[in-house]
Length: 133
Image 1: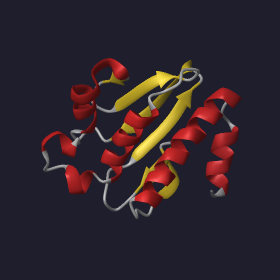
Image 2: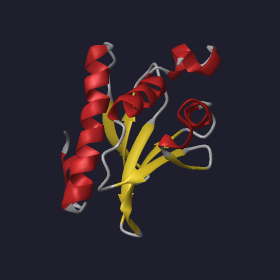
Image 3: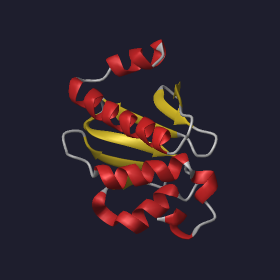
């Protein structure tokens, strides 16, 4: 983890930081399991995860909505549209680019892993019906 990313994590309240670190852990775990090189950086002031095979994932918590975590996906993809179709109201959504959940809630880890993997491998899956779900 580079210094800018460490500094960003340090800005979050404890509960939000723990949830974000869980999501970060899932991203790197998926990368290791599937042989993907994950680059961690900041984009637009948000924690961002990039891979050559997929679409950028950004994660954040806002002090304006202290009870919410957000995972941002590229709005020019079919990712969030597909998540809505497959998982319905399991998650909360904002337009065609954000999956949201409560900071204090236990999130659906298995389903979220599948969403994150679809983003990390998007270029390989985008031609498949329902992205191969």
